[in-house]
Amino acid sequence: MLLTKITFFERFEHDILSGTKTITLRDEAESHVITGQILPVSTFETDRWFCDIQIIDVTPVKLTELTEMHAKQENMTLPQLRDVIAEIYPGLEQLFMIRFRILSQ
Ligand SMILES: CC(=O)Nc1ccn([C@H]2C[C@H](O)[C@@H](CO)O2)c(=O)n1
Figure 1 (cartoon, helix red, strand yellow):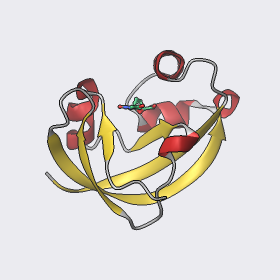
Figure 2 (cartoon, protein in one colour):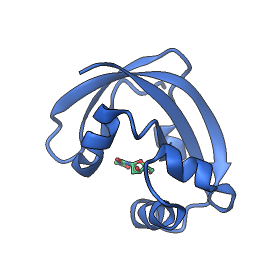
Figure 3 (cartoon, helix red, strand yellow):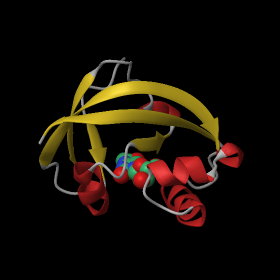
Figure 4 (spheres, protein in one colour):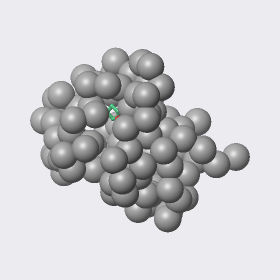
């Protein structure tokens, strides 16, 4: 079943809207999106809509395969990105990189 919306933690809203965060790494349950799909984006904390995004593509990536390139697209350093992933998805190895662009805000 395709996702019909996606949420982000509020602390990432500015980076998304400014275009400095152009990917998100999710678990399998949140990877069910397809190229070209348009999704409303809201905050995880209060479900406040803040933009629509269009999915560019979805690619499986293992935790051990993350590089500075992934971190740059998250507007983080690689250690910061690894910390965030460990906090949100403790113990998870298989992730999915969702690349997106902002459509409207
Ligand atoms: C519910 C849930 O999992 N919400 C998430 C998951 C991930 N993110 C952000 C955090 C990092 O920038 C990347 C990598 O996971 O995606 C999020 O904002 N909300």
